[in-house]
Length: 213
Image (tube, rainbow, N blue to C red):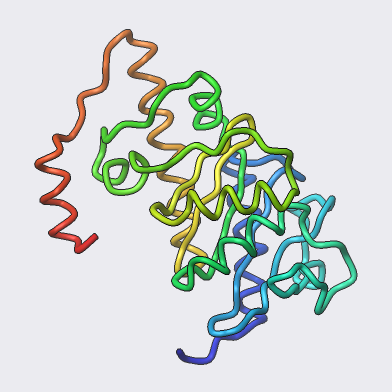
């Protein structure tokens, strides 16, 4: 693994929060993102309670996988157990993103299942599990999300939002964007009173072989 510039990682985490807010995927204090420095147990994560679009790199905090503060002056996001629980189980994941995407969250509330209506949805979203509501910020929620993350890059949270994972920061961001895009398409089709046409299982298997997934 090559050298990773921590300052550049911190700048990208700040940029992610601004992107998610600009896209309407989170409120000013409603999302969080973290990055595990490769081959370490050190995690940069957004702080708790601060307005995310206005964060500076010095506002970020570094924790270990038990949530102990290593650097920074603020408390880490209350959802740090989600992040660290995933990192403990998924050595291939270096970024965890949690947002409250409104269309996706609304469909979860309505009990609408995400189906393979696009290539991206077939490969990523249709396999996503929904974690029942567990009180935010708890170890129990962290463990439940980490268990659901074992087979997917996207985890849906009942009455809460979604979590996406990535090898790097922009893989996690892309997964969140694809989730909300799929949710909007599903919503539009439902409003038109039709069932969205799905990609067949045969084609999905061919796609997985093609992309080695």
